[in-house]
Length: 205
Ligand code: SF4
Image (cartoon, rainbow, N blue to C red; front, side, top):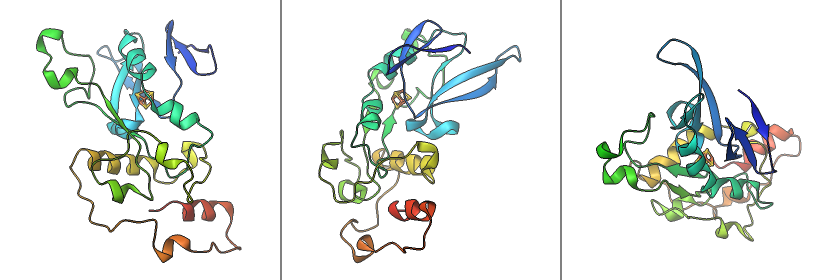
């Protein structure tokens, strides 16, 4: 697949300009003829295995462009205040999990609803329960802010994504008390730890 970067924020795939996003993942599948094909998956909606399929190589990618180009998550992740603790998720309406997209005459009202973006934080998600923040305003001035490394370096990123999706969908109740204010949260890291141990300690799992 020929991916040609155009501007700082976009990539051209099959002559379609699509917003770059660190949470969009590609996976190899077989098409109906048994030929290799790439699927583009929104990791923010469930990770590489369970996420929403945005499009497939060799097919019309205009739907993927419309979804990703209007998505607020890439801007948040590219912000200088992007935080290690942030686990943005995008919740697509039921019935939009798999392409090809069904014909307009078969679409339900739920299918026409826009995909919702939420910005849960590993420290503070218990405060918001199902009503997770819709932007990152609350990150400004947060005492727990830590620079966000590449997604590949963040432990358990996709399981955490699925957990936050279950929370915003009401499929998982939050039973833990609000976090972020406990003595454990102020624990002093052991000076002998390497960078990986310090990174894990910063993540509230
Ligand atoms: S929908 Fe948003 S979060 Fe998902 S891959 Fe596209 S830009 Fe990224």
